[in-house]
Image (cartoon, rainbow, N blue to C red; front, side, top):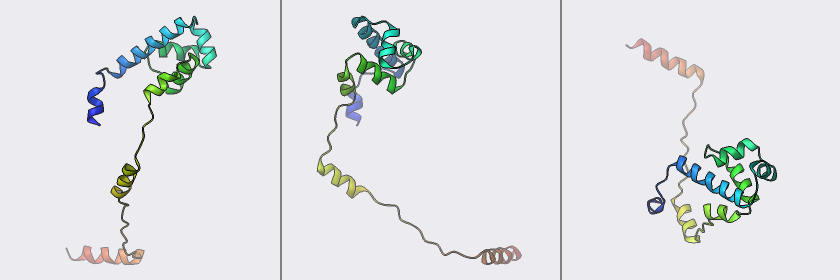
Length: 124
């Protein structure tokens, strides 16, 4: 996991929001669409699109709808490539799993608890 993190560019979340917003805006302009048209085609609000393009935060659903509408599903696939898990890794994970053990304690009646507290309190 550390190897993956060390390869990643050192951008903050805010920098990524701005960068993605700029790229969405560039795609929209290249497609010769204004914000109202793209928002309508993507079935999102104009405000949501403005927030996305302005780097002011957006939902994942909004990002997916806009990227698909602009004909760039490859962006989404690049963002989350298919991760294969080998059968050996599955077996190792199952072997490492240890179910929680249940602890059984005897149940005492309410009378027994009251009687114990009375005897403890009187010996001080």
